[in-house]
Image 1 (cartoon, one colour):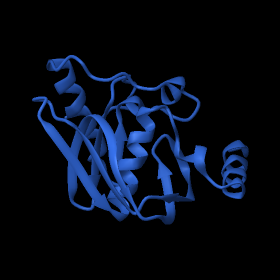
Image 2 (tube, one colour):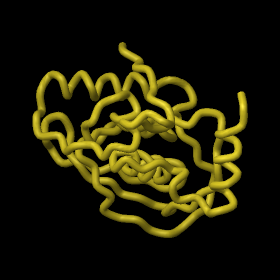
Image 3 (cartoon, one colour):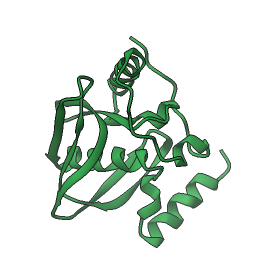
Image 4 (cartoon, rainbow, N blue to C red):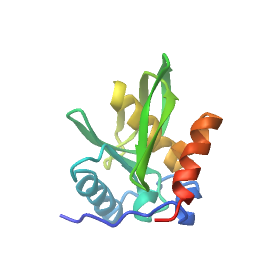
Length: 160
């Protein structure tokens, strides 16, 4: 079991779009295993590969009893809209209210290159959207309302 250290806000890897996976080899299998081990820690719902320093388009999730991973994910369906609290392992100590689709479907492949889909509502939908954003180099704070973004940025710039 390998729980990898997390990259935090300010690390350029978090703002760098991930590359599609083209080599399905032992190194990729180890990355997926590390993502699953790392997201299994208490209080974690999802984890994108760039949050542990990899530039490959893979994420893992562990939300509401749904556990898995998706390689080369793409959002294929969004329905509804809901506001709710959101946080990020790479931006510890702060959460913010953010709008997301209430239901989301992400499609990609598994280690055997077979098609996979992850779908859900509520927290799982939020997680699937959040992790897919990470792989594009986007953070949840990027799309907050102006007042919420100012609040978060004040908190983040406050002396520790």
